[in-house]
Length: 554
Image 1: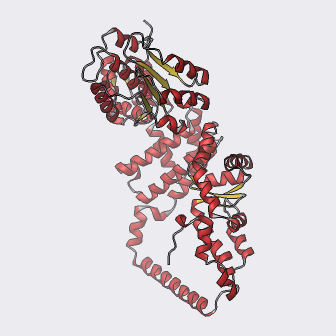
Image 2: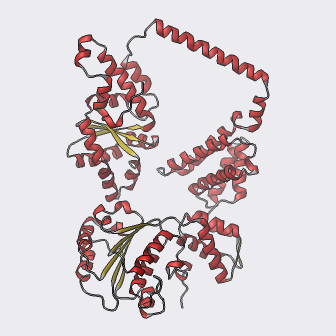
């Protein structure tokens, strides 16, 4: 008999064998025992978390003549044939390669016929989000009026791509990432069954990099068993997955702490020559600092937690930038230099903090400096009170505010002048659908850019989109091709041509306030007669962005 991979050899055959997913197992077992199972299920969750395994166990449980406590017997002909994937009443379909409307129509035509051997016909459609729109429409009719002998189980890793009309007709179960403790227990059981020795540290490392996927962890374990002769070691696992040795990370951070960026970058290039990936290195650096923060390791015992927080934030920002870059090595080099600069700041170390606290002379100097600043502020306030400042110059303000901003303030103000609450309300209502069109057209990159964005102002021909991430805003505003593509989709949904401008979340409130100060308040101060006829600043800004999106503070 040919060799079978570990994840196939040790695939769960009963609900109790499945690792994790207690909420799913308990609900489905109770439904089987009470004979009250639904006609359609949707299993969604990360890869390798047991979706297809539970689907097959469920198919056996409802068709097994000797089922006990909701579990299949796994000894009868029905259970054995379903396990071997050769039962004619249980069909497992890969939607990635059978995603057309013809395949779904074939299922729709055959489902009306009674099962040949079992009580129920079970259709397991894996990666169902890969179906085309026409295929979903063909499936919808079957889910609306299913025959009593048919059960559909849809499995997906991307439920947001499935039409809501399909989801609403299914019982949905969200599978969770499997905990590291559960994965380690399962790998220990398998290693003992095989009879191979292992280092606990190696199993912990595998569970960590598997990121909640049991199948991934067993795949790495399978490689480690083949690579190791008699014992699974942490070194062999790191070599297999292209990870970074602990001593290499220690050396890298020693160079960073010692203010030696050249040596740190040289070590990084050495790791690249060894076949290590830049993304893996940055990932390992993040977890190294996490361990230093949580366990207070000796490597950073003299470093303030505030410093470690800053370093983690710098690494996290680099990881976000690397997702949209083709040259990740430059980002890592820049990150190393940033970390060296952070470590060179004396205010972040414990020793310096103690020195500052124990020096009375420095206390006196600091107090003198603060008193001086306070006096300067008082003088400035008196000048402002006695000499009211002239009206702000729009041209000079715009000039200053555009410095290093990822958007044009002048263009933003032009849109705000023409903005209408009705236009914003309509765009806000359509925004989830607009983002969904990028998913349906396989434009996942643009969907990622717009994932945490929202419209904040709109006119009949122009819109303002707020981005949570500054880098996403900058990409959209500077990349004409991406911006035109987004504008095209917005125009198609709204039924009219529009142009857009992005504004960072961190800048939006300030920009809106500047618009109020420059345009609305100045216009209202122009004459007494105009004050009576024009709207107040509060009314004007409510008209632009909507009453629900504004909160005034006295």
